[in-house]
Image (cartoon, rainbow, N blue to C red; front, side):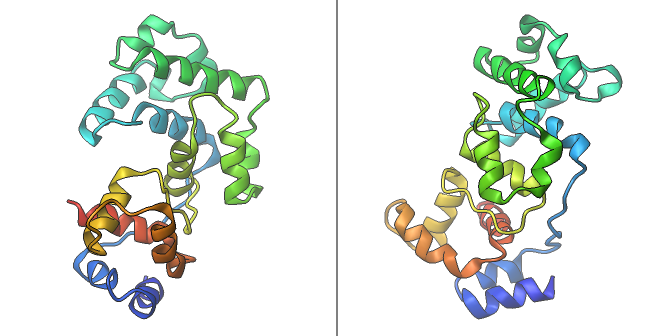
Length: 199
């Protein structure tokens, strides 16, 4: 982690103090491909929800599965009404079914994602209705352990940049691009610090 912190000390004197303030910065870790479907379900369920609301729905959703193992074949056996009963919207219930059908039908090969670039993963995932760039970017960060991801579509990240870099209004994408460029190859770590800065 020292190498990463030193990178920000050298390249971003405004963000660096937030690295110093934030204790226990954890390494970005890759999960097993067998868990990718579960991660994608989580990202779909938690779209546009607070952490508390998303976690509550997710906990009830997981209990619908045998041994609480979220698998695409099992999801297809759960009725739309039962998916809705855990608190998710009609649209999200449909999106989860779209994802399960894409995987079981061979249109989305999650086990092949590891050999793809970040851009290729986003392109592949966003072919599935219900998965947009933000969902794909969160998946790259939290499931695939990619270290150089930033999501322009994330409201929290935009608000944190506005706060730390003292923009009067929410920054434009062009303004953000200029700020985050020096963060490479550790944009994911910077994103975590930005989220932590809002806590």
